[in-house]
Image (tube, rainbow, N blue to C red; front, side, top):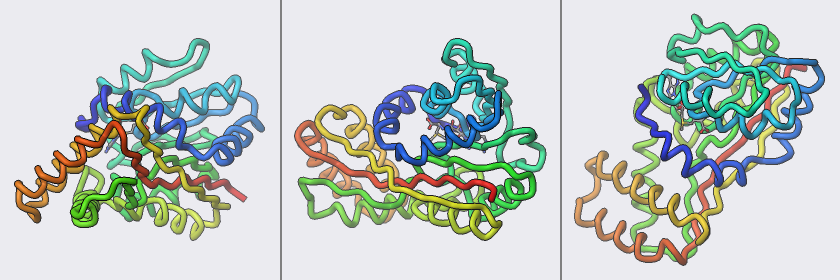
Amino acid sequence: MSGFEARWLDLREPADIAARDRGLLEAAAAYLSARPNALAVDLGCGTGSTLRTLGPLVPGLRWRLVDNDPALLAEAERRRPAGSTVEAVLADLGELDALELKPARLATASALFDLASRDFVAGLAKRLARERIGLYAALSYDGTIAFDLPHPQDAAVIALFNAHQRGDKGLGAALGPDAGAVLAEELAAQGLDVRTAPSPWRLDASMTGLQTKFVEGMATAVGETGEMPEAEIAAWLDARLAVVGSSFCRVGHLDVLALPK
Ligand SMILES: C[S@@+](CC[C@H](N)C(=O)[O-])C[C@H]1O[C@@H](n2cnc3c(N)ncnc32)[C@H](O)[C@@H]1O
């Protein structure tokens, strides 16, 4: 089990859809469309956000959905768009060698690689290059968070949040904010043709629920580092929650598309 809740994934999905770089999404769709009834393997599928976003752009696309959380995997299968062909695979990505990727044309993932280690990313890049499979990896957190209404503790909180992001989330010491850049580097080193594009969340007053959960999550993560007094964290969180309905928050991500040459 991963600890990710369907409710949290649902809350972020509209922001994720708006954030995904349209050019890379359409290039991934065009690459898949060039082969009739191609197979896409979605790694860490959650409830199927990538299937719902990319799937409708590629008629006839088949999916293999992979996650180690049986509840999320079942939800992804249940919510699959009508007419789509889906195979659900309960598997730990930590055992990548045991995971069948062929005959996929493209592996996909969203909000996954910031949880993974450099070794994991390097191993996956080697495997994709060897098997001539492309990768569309959306929404890797890039370490940048900006509020339009600043608070004096923002920089300290963000630094500790980013340090927490580098902890082990089950796939080795996590890349956290470095994930997108490392992914691009490792894929390019394997000879894939790599494109990247920023895909920031833009959380305005219409996304108060997500901004609330996000700043609460930041405060919890900072608390877990033990590096900031609880009272300071609580004061920062109170100040953030007091303006959540009127403030704008930008959270940086990077999208990566890597295709065999
Ligand atoms: C942040 S969620 C993103 C889910 C989905 N891709 C999305 O964009 O909504 C990360 C997903 O990766 C899965 N995951 C994390 N570690 C995993 C592992 N070691 N093996 C398989 N799945 C894993 C989690 O269960 C979760 O569904």
